[in-house]
Image (cartoon, rainbow, N blue to C red; front, side, top):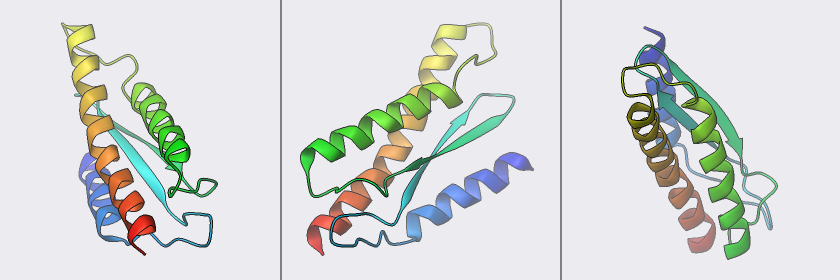
Length: 109
């Protein structure tokens, strides 16, 4: 049940448009890792970044990577490294889609 709630919240975040002020994004990215037995999520703030600048997009990317590693740390399973790598890759990839949407919204608007 907990997993469904988190997945629903993450899915809803995809449909919420990223609002941008002159230099800030009023949005966050949710990084969710499915650790087989439990789902963890971390909110990564983008509010202090200007996603029109490539440097800030790289900062956001690094924050998402750290969050993906955090939510997938100590993944249970027989193949710890394989499960953890899969979790990190999926968590990062899904959150990166949200970041790409936020970047597009800021740069197109």
